[in-house]
Structure formats: C-alpha cells, structure tokens
Image 1 (cartoon, helix red, strand yellow):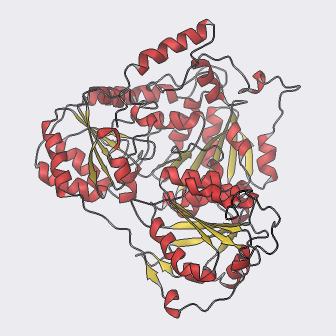
Image 2 (tube, helix red, strand yellow):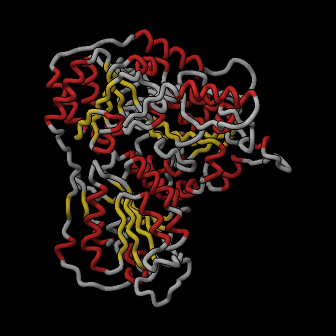
Image 3 (cartoon, one colour):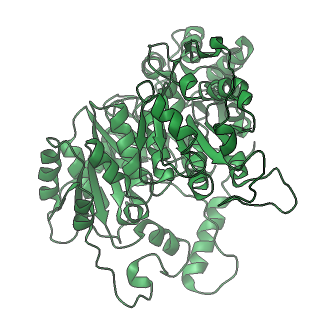
Amino acid sequence: MVKWLAVQMTEEGERFIDGVWAIFGHGNVAGMGEALHRYRDELPTWRGQNEQTMAHAAIAYAKTKRRRRAQAVTTSIGPGATNLVTAAALAHVNRLPLLMICGDVFANRRPDPVLQQIEDFDDGTVSANDCFRPVVRYFDRITRPEHLLTCLPRALRVMTDPANCGPVCLSFCQDVQAEAHDYPLSFFQPRIWRIRRPMPDPRELEDALAALRAAERPLIVAGGGVLYSGAEAALAAFAARHDIPVVETQAGKGVLGCDNPHNFGSPGVTGSGCGNALAARADLVLGIGTRFQDFTTGSWALFDRDCRFVSINLAGHDAAKHGALPVVGDARMALVALSDLMGDRRFGWQDPAARDSWQEAVRAVTAAPVAAGLPTDAQVIGAVQRTATDRTVAMCAAGTMPGALQVLWQAAPGGYHMEYGYSCMGYEIAGAMGIKLAAPERDVVCFVGDGSYMMANSELATAVMRRVPFTVVLTDNRGYGCINRLQIASGGAEFRNMYKDSDLEALPQIDFVAHAGAMGAHAEKAADIADLEARILAARDRDIPTVIVIDTDAAPGLDLGGHWWDVAVPQAGDGPRLDAARARHAQNAARQNPVD
C-alpha cells in the first residue's frame, strides 16, 4: 500500500498523496508503521496529537490545493479510528479528498474479541469502522492482502473524481496488514491521475441559455466549485461581458476580488445588504459550483417565489436542487460555452451605488473603537483587515466569526478559507496548519473563539515542532457567545452557553496565553485594537505560531446585513420572548419556497 501510494502522481509531477499523518497503536503500528518506516524517504509520515485534528489539517491542505493533492491519515482500531468520524463527515459535506487508513479487527478472528473491538451481537461482520459508511464516499474493508489490487485504485479514483470527490475509508484488518503477498510488478509503475473537465450536455446549455435570455435580472451565486475548477478568470470575464452581479457563498468567497465591480458580497443569512437586496429582486439565479446550503438561500426564504434557478455543477445531485435547470459539467468549460452562446447580451440591472454604500457601512462597523470598553468581533476583524496584504488568508470554522467574516472581510483573490459546510468547532488551529503547509508563501490568520480553542488546540504543539508559522487571533468572550445570541433570538432564556449562566461554583480563570505558551507557541495578550494590530504585524517575522488573545464583548451581534435563518422555535411554552420568536418564525416561514 505505502509503496503504491508513493508513485501515484499528479500531472504536475508531484505525489497526489503528499504524506501520511499517523498516531500508532495496536492495529496499525506493526503493519502500516513498519511499512511507513521502510518507505519514509518516498512517502513522509508526520506525527500529530489527535486523529480528528490530524485529519482536519489534511482536509485544509486539500482545500487549499483545490483538490489537486491530498493527504492520508492512519489510525489504530477503536477510539483512534472513530476519532476520525467527525473529520470524515466534514470532508464529505465539503466535497474534499481525504484518505483514512484505519486499523480493524483480526480477519481470521482467532483472538476475538481483541482489545477495543466493538462486537455486534447479531452481525459478526460489523466493527466500529462501519461508523464511517454514512460519512465517506468510498468504504472498503481489507480482509485479504490481494484486495489492495482493487481497493487502492478505487480509492484514488474517488478522490480525483471532481463530481464524486470526498473522503475514503480503507478499513485494514490488522492481521492482514502483516501478511505477505506476491504482487505484480506492474502494480507499482508510476501512474498519473488527471482531474477531468466534463463538458456539459449541449441540450442543458440550450435550456440554460433560453432561461437567461428570458430573464431581466439574473444573479450569479458563486460557490466553491468555481475555485476547484480554476474558473475564477472565466467567471470574472462572464460577469463583465454580460454585466451580471455576483454574490459569493462561504466556500466561494474570494473567487472575485473585493474590488471587482461585479462583486456584491454574499447572499443569505450572513449576506451583505447589497447582495441580499439583489437576491430579493432577481428573477433568475445562476448557481455555479454551489450546493445551495440554507445559509446561502436564507432557508429558501430569500428569493422571490417566481425566481427561476439554473445550476452549473459537476454533481447532478447538486445541479438539480430546488427544481433548477441543471447544467452538469465543469464550471470553467460551462461558463465559456454559455458566454459564447449568449454573445454580447448584457443586463446591467445592479446599482453600483448600493455596493459603495455597503462597503462604507462595513468600514464604519470595523473601524477602531473610539470609546472605552471591550471591542466587538467586527472591530477585531477590522484590525486584522488593516494589517492584511494580498498574501493574507483569513480562516475560521465555527462560532460568531464565520458569519461576521463572510459579511465583513474584504478578501483578495484566494484570501479566504472557511469550513462552513460542517462548521466544525476545533477545525481552526489544525486547519490553519494545513493551509500553511499547502501554501507556505501565504500569511495565514486563524480566527478562533475561546470555545473552539478549548475544544481542540493540541495541533498547536505540532505546528511548533514542525516550525509551521501562522497567527491565531483568539477572541475570548467567556463562553459560546454566538449560540447564546441565537438562544435569545429563538425565545429561550440564557442557559449554559456563557460561563456566567452555567451555575458554576467558580468562574473559570483560563490563562490562554500561558496555555499556548506551554505548547511552545509565541503567546501574548493584546490590550486593545491598536495593540492587536501591532502584534499581528510583528508575528510575521516568526517561524512558529503566534497566539494573540484579546477579550471581546459577547453581547452585540453584527446588526449589519443578514437574513432570516430557520431555527425551530418551540410551539408550546409561555412568555413574551417565546411569543415574539414564534411570531417572527411564522412570518418568515410563510415566505419559504423549498420546492425540489
């Protein structure tokens, strides 16, 4: 397996599997561990601190590489393997390649039950690794050594398939890992894996063309598929030639620079004011590489009921959502073909002044505070923005910052990395390391709240040991401020989100600076926004991660842009807060049009 993986190449002459993250235990140390050591010069192995966060780093690497390269993770059986399930789901939702090689029980069953074996009383073929089946694109259990001849090519085929791309779990029985087998020499010949670019069906292009010709107010919703296709230039040319406004999803943010006149920010729940105004008036939405998540569509209450949808996507599952006219194919190829068919038809229905007004509003809320008191999340974003260059990548995953960053961050092309398909707390620090490994020339700034930091921070030590520098801006609002605000907005009482509402015997005295410093990072606390800016600039000269802690105000939300999000409100219960929440929910739900 290791020898084979080492010769699977990209068109650029690099290994498709860059290397392997490993935590060894019984189930992979004697088999995979020995093989990785033997071929350590051909395929590097890296030691991490937690199986889930090692996989998060690998996922961030693949996302940064636009799915052109990937990394693998190997684990023991039992908790080592099941620690990966969350990361597998994250990769699945985001359509990102990840190879997981997990130890499993003995195929010969002689020592059953082995340590950490889950026994199904009714099915002798089941193990804990069956947990992966719903959250991977390909699962295989290797119970004979010759299975590698078929399962390995299948695994790489999935990971390099632009339509079916996602995580793979190879569940490798630990006794089989140690068995010898005579493999054909031809199996180990180097192979090049190409990412195909399927042309859309001409009939689907004609349907899309007819819909666009009939429209007066088309709007482009650009998703992550634009980046994976490398279609940024094609999209910019298409929008300019036909004068169509563009809004970017979380995964698509940065496909156009913030200064592009056709970029009107973001749509939906965390949408810009000018972008959502366009979405409400659009009579046709052209989705490109988006899966139309509920945040993008405002839980399907954002668009007019008579609005039509055309969806360019490699995955037929995504292309046909919401009754859209599907155009199944590569985004770049589809845009070029569709533009040629449209000729010089221009629309020009957007209001440039609205875009200017929105950007002025963003500058106002992100400006440095003039009054005393704790800064807001928006002011923290403003501090980082003012220090940013065209090499800066802002990244995050969960809490307040993803929504605030989508609305406020002015991204240079390629300057935004958000894991919001799964919005997984704990992705941030490991993800920042993965981005920096994939793009060492980039200046990576990781936004993380105190809650996410507490959930998963151990790969900070890995980054120190490997000398992978990035900057962590740790905003401490003393609890789960984002969900606390959602709890209130949904009619609930403040309960068990902020430390102050958790009936604790004593409020926590967490010294984040001391904690990060104990793992070897350069750690410090910013006194205010001006101090934060200075410390961010100084961090760029270090060869280890820098953690900058700043206390923030948990109470204020963004109160800028945005749209309704469908969060279920209890139908029973008393109190004015619940009554008001129920009334708001009923009013907004009446506008939903979730036809599929």
